Image 1: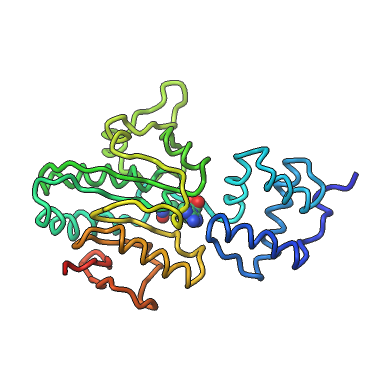
Image 2: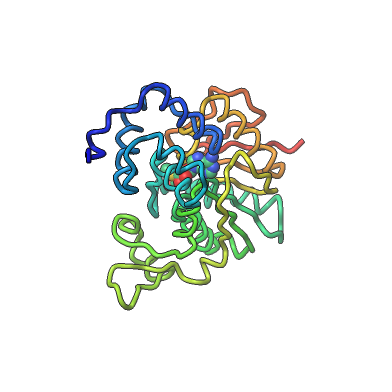
Length: 280
Ligand SMILES: C[S@@+](CC[C@H](N)C(=O)[O-])C[C@H]1O[C@@H](n2cnc3c(N)ncnc32)[C@H](O)[C@@H]1O
């Protein structure tokens, strides 16, 4: 029997079929130069599933006999890499620049956030922790966080809220003590505390298929890179609709909306840029 590692790269036709499936299910655009990357990653999946060619994998995926496989397939293409205290400037922007304005606009109201493309949950939990920390300066306010990702597996992981190693390396010790509890049976493994977890509701869903909101603020960091320009613009419009007037969109530090013609107003603050939905 030949080893899957002897299987050649995807042919252009095979690549096109997988690329079409990815676009159809996740709106993710795979450019042709990704053929070697996709071949290498799929070969690993074929090996794990003991399948001998891409065609068998395509049929297996489409058959739906293993509902988790579509999630794994997305993970082959996207990176779910994330960690607590990633680009902390975004959280400073939120606490110091955006929240005072949001709270002044909505006194006494519950504030709603969306972590769109939350991967394994670090971003929304981090948001919850930073918002509670921010209350020391801002005073108390009720809030909810909706967190969503395409990958069912990532969302399941996020709901468990158990992290270790690189994922929590950057968490300041005082925060680790305040918002996590160490697993008694596994040193170095930490659970997010229940009072933080209850602030976050996780959903496995495609950003292009759900209509949710309204929100006061949306975080969508390091997600848009997967989409074509056309789909990015579509997504930005969906975010605009999902925000309340006066609301803000925060994207990743290497991302920008400057090439798009959108109704958002670009606001430069001391801690970075946020996109503002103006009040009419
Ligand atoms: C690199 S992670 C970003 C995690 C987090 N926002 C951060 O910045 O650390 C990108 C995530 O986007 C998700 N994603 C990609 N396409 C998506 C879609 N169409 N709908 C929902 N999530 C999607 C992937 O599953 C992945 O978990």
